[in-house]
Length: 229
Image (cartoon, rainbow, N blue to C red; front, side, top):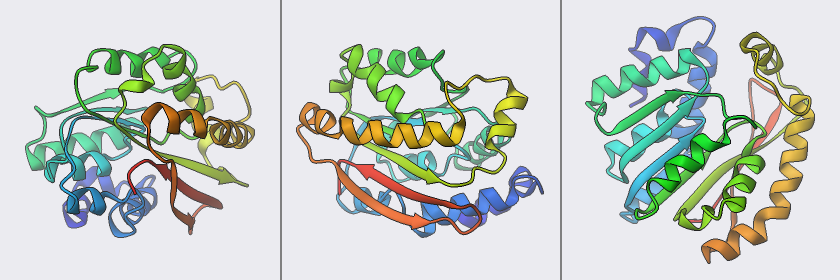
């Protein structure tokens, strides 16, 4: 799969190539989401909701290995989204994968809750990587009494002392954040920790802290939290 990505012209844009290679390493080589475990245990879900789908590595692994039947993907960066669309063409996944260009923030929480509302009778795997908005998304689902329909969950929690380019991108896209991005991630991390018991009780599953690694090209610590290890 890595070779397929690297053959896509958009993947190799100078402005995104380093980031894209980092994503391949984290998701495929290092298996930060423990997808291999899901494959080995023959896990099956009707729906994958991939919030912050980036270049589509998680979704592509889920669909090509038949872990999920259908995927709903949300990505705010058009360059990442277009790489994902090209991958869908290569693997023939267009009919099974819905991709929308949406920035998940305080004004767009309904996007995720509406997907769950429309799929309440199905098994749902929720993956989140939205750089500091995970807490707000979860709180919104709890407030709407929708989180109980999520079968399994994985999300990233970042601790960043530097966030190169992220604030600049947000400014360029004219998207609003309630806090400075660095501060927001730290706040989000603390609030997520406070939510863990509620998540665990709602799903009747343990919350497990999975892969933890220090970024090589950015100064961050990546921690995955999930319900299936």
